Length: 319
Image 1 (cartoon, rainbow, N blue to C red):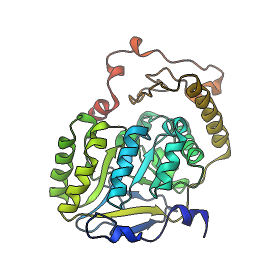
Image 2: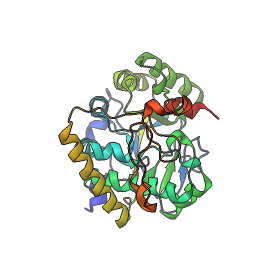
Image 3: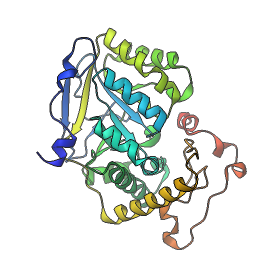
């Protein structure tokens, strides 16, 4: 059995067929050779789900306490999900990335720094995409899926074309849990069920950095089971390929983060993502900022304008 097949099983585990759990109805193997697009937003090219079938997806992690709670809930229901990970989050906690993969979930990429690619030129967008894949693959210490989700679901023609050239599938969504807008798990559950009552199927979006989802996920899975929904697990036909230059950069960034963590192991990681250029609310210098020889540390959060301090999820809602 190849490494890819070992990482991405093409069969449903025995426990997934139990009548008392959600389990899995089937596994869909995705051929990414032509860079297909899935999901309602952005408009998908492919619709592989039948009535009452859903795909579980989680963005922006890993975040150890929340991600592990979600993994435990998924295990309790013998079901699987896809995790679109941010490269710098993966680099900060590679053990958590490996745990997600070890538990049989699909690991995919969500850029290096959660940059809004819609507003970037293609060279910077490429940096974000490629370093994201390299960092997540390095953290996973094994094959990951050539699956990608645009931060804020904001696409660009140039980035879509680039992903297609790299044989990467792009995934939009059909149902938005809106877990970033509340700390109340019951509200997240109600959001999901209300949208499913209209759509009856689809790709569900959660964030494993959000406490609301971590608290609600068990009840959500129970509700999906009670309402007769079936879980479909998506896996790739072949694993993602990474580029050597970005692999080297990912190794360097990972080493930097190990040193930083050793010095301050209790430091929290910001989940307010940057919005403009290479700006980062935590003061991070993006790895490619020094390419012109004029690397600049971004302004600290207290010096940012009010609009620049708006959390990423509120900016996503703006036109």
